[in-house]
Image 1 (tube, rainbow, N blue to C red):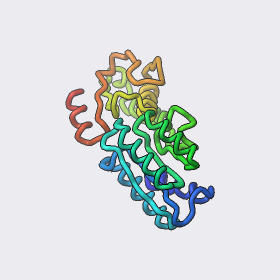
Image 2 (cartoon, rainbow, N blue to C red):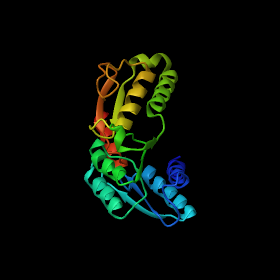
Image 3 (tube, one colour):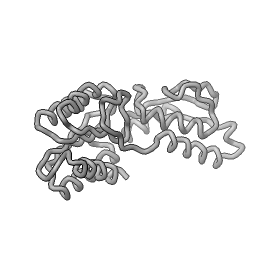
Length: 215
């Protein structure tokens, strides 16, 4: 799925006339250790090679650390890139992307939409709320009557209320049948079945530690 996402986005850049053979396109992911972003990079590299494009990949160090992404955006602008594909760490990368668009660069947000519509030309993403909703419905149906006494621990990326994180989180809770007063932030629910929220920083190690804390 991640390979298809970046490959399709690169194909769009080429077919829309923003980039041709030899032109530079950049991919900027949240980090280069998460398997999802590794596959995303592989897909982009393959698509760029097939199109004859120059391709450069950049990444943040950890989820939520926007400074490396901002530096990468500025480097891509200075290098004369025609397109930037980015999984934004948070909305603080928005101003740099607005500057990139002003320089004539096509900006496509992948997986995580930015709050400011001026920061991206378009977004390629799954419907993360719907994905969470379906998983929540499945979990509730699987538990049956036991769902009323479930103990639910929530693993979040971080505490920045990143759009993709909020959508998956709240979607799951709604699907499970839990009232969520505010769908724009995590943690607004008061249902006693929620035993807590812990952050994983989008890493396996962070997820293990977070789950140990919840248990």
